[in-house]
Image 1: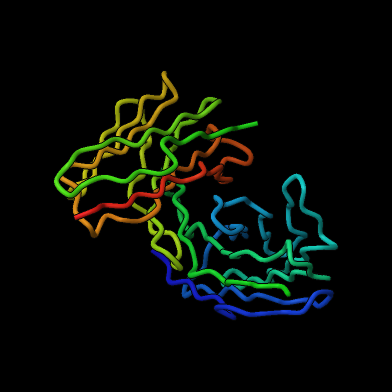
Image 2 (image 1 turned 180 degrees about the vertical axis):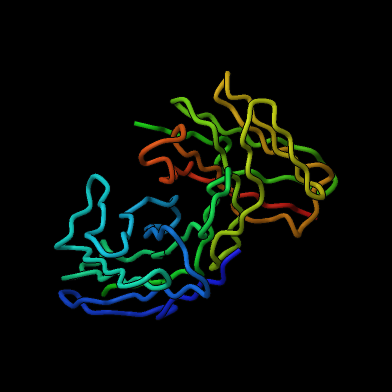
Length: 117
Length: 114
């Protein structure tokens, strides 16, 4: 499995500001994903971060609110823009390691706990 | 749209008892995953189930998959306190475009009481 780190691990932000979350993997991966987990809730996929092209967003999520970058096969960023208290969540990146695996198993980073005041 | 339902959402059980968590999903899938999440932590992969009739066991946990019924179960045998956590099932669509995208159930918060 891949070792995944996220920065920051947690932050408290003011309404109207933006925060960029970084996801770093210790090995090259084919796919990287960003999920949101609202307090006490399940995980919802925000987008798939595509290397060298624009991210693919799920219904209900837009690029202006959640711009994503993926400059290479080991790194991605998610920005939460113009934050409101409703954006308070845990944001997790996950990865699918390089190489064929029938399971297509994903591994999750430690998450970034965001509180918006 | 793929929907995943877990039940129960909350489970309080005594140490030493057995119980089963159920995961139903709405459309055809060939991959089902079980994850564990401890409070304030990320998700830990427990099981990957790839075919009808698949059964996997690790310690006191056993997971199975019935693709015809679109049902997976996570069975807990002789529960111990260390198993207290939230358990999520997640389903991926049938292999093909978008087949990496996981849809999660709401999770089952398990509390094991001495």
